[in-house]
Image: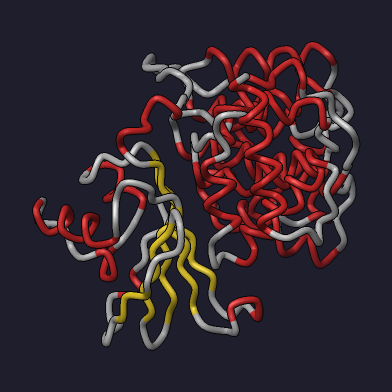
Length: 338
């Protein structure tokens, strides 16, 4: 959850006429946009929050409130601060899947048994757990994946050295299979987190990409979040073409809105790994609701990801107009209705 505490002090709120599938609030310090509305309106959201005794949208909007109080099928909240793309004004992107569309959301089943951390992963997990912020920073730093760290990085990442050793160790095919099995079946959250890191060392294997992509549907946030980070870093460290056809059905769950925090990273990874145009119909036909909403939103970075992804699947130039991309998406739906 990314809580919007930064808007608690905003005043003089002005509601701007909403564009399709979105609603915008302008404050002196921020632009707040709800992306993905179709039947709901901004007023309905705020009235519902008031009914359940929750704070107003502008004061404490977060994914947890939208999901738990208003029963939105999924939601994400991202805050962009000091970005030139937003003219250095805070921009808050609230993306939602409305309650009536809950059938689109397909998280993996909960695993409820309690199991101990595997002995071979215990030291690395202990360092990760005790130093979460340094670990998160390290995992998003390309040089952390080098076998030998510079003296500066050695000092900077000293607290998570056991995690570094795990990542740069030589892992064999048996460990690859074990990590895949762990993410699918192991009820231990620490074990699943460590399995993510092991899988991130196999960028040359399509199955590692498939498993990490599907692990973004893990119902435990830390597992899903680390899977997104692992995929993003793999696509930066070792970008290559991945054959996504064997798991296209599960990719569709993500594109339809399952784990909206992972929506942008998913599009970016599919783009970086040259998702095949033959999957366009499977992934987008009869859906693409969130992509359409992002395309028409003020979320500059999210729209950029959507345009690049649509360009890859459609063959249209990235410079094409929004109308051109929407027409192409409508064409996919027209084919499916024949």
